[in-house]
Length: 111
Image (cartoon, rainbow, N blue to C red; front, side, top):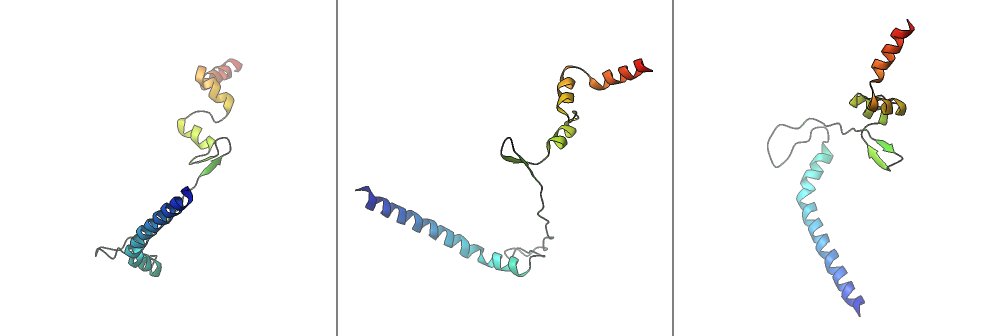
């Protein structure tokens, strides 16, 4: 009983979606053709302004195996930006006391 109703709904939804896409595409087609013909100097055809400089779209990310997500910094870069030791033991000890002061004091005692 529901199959014809589902098919009708599915057809009408896809038809409406394709109409929306076709309208957007026809509006963007002159812009797409202009950018493809001269990618180094993109100029918006709707306004007569100076051409925009070419943009370098470069980025870097690191994959974290534990979270299965990308992140912008490696763990070493993250801890270095916070001013915390990069090794695990150093981070744990720095939470309880000043490791640098302790090492300096040990060096003075050894002299």
